Structure formats: structure tokens, C-alpha cells
Image 1: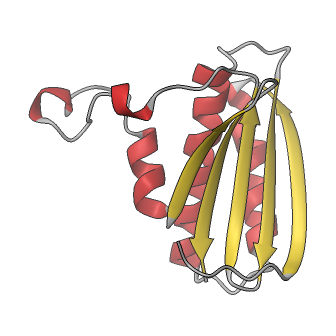
Image 2: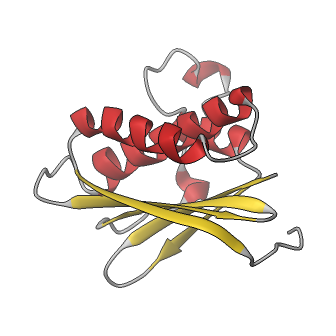
Length: 142
């Protein structure tokens, strides 16, 4: 893990209902937040894709598409990195129990690649389980 600066530049949050139609709001939110950063446009697109995949997983798997449950998104920019947190009401999962989407017998599946995208586009990710929520934390260095 890199030495992270704790000097916060900004902090923005968004809460959405667990409805896949809300992904567009998340994209607009992320574009607006990232427009205030020095990340190149290609990196911004990677960050938005990772955030979108994380939110999609939170809606679908975390909250089970239950539209009465919320997903919260937090984007905090520090001097050294961007930190994003996505929280849902789910119980979380065991990363080691997921099938590897790069294996030949998994390549034709229509789903199961979101976490792979997140891992490739972000510098660090971790999962936090608390009594009241499950959280995906993603970091992208500057």
C-alpha cells in the first residue's frame, strides 16, 4: 500500500435507490466530480466504469434489486489519490468463491466481469463488512 496523503481536497456523496435506471445519475455525478480533478480523460473513463460496475453489483447482488433499499456513493479526493466508497445493505461475499471470468469455460458468460474491470481499473480495492452494510472501497492514485 502506498503512503497516502490525508489532505482532503473535496468530498462528494450521492444516494440512489437500488434501480439499474439510476446508473445514469451515477455516471453524471462521477463526471461532474472528476471534472474538478487532474486525471486525464482516459483515466476518468476508467474510474467511471469501475464506479458503475461497483454500483451495479451493489444494486443487483448487494441489495437484490430491492428498490426500497439505497446504495450510497462517496467520492473523496486527496492530494495523493481518489477514494470511492460504495455501500449497500447486503451481506457481502467471499471473493475467493467467485468463478474466474478469464477461464475458457467462463468467457462466453454474459455476466461476471464487473469485479475484473474494477480490479483492472483501480489501484486498490477492499471489501468491508459491517453489521448494517457492505462496502466496496476503491482507490486510484494520482
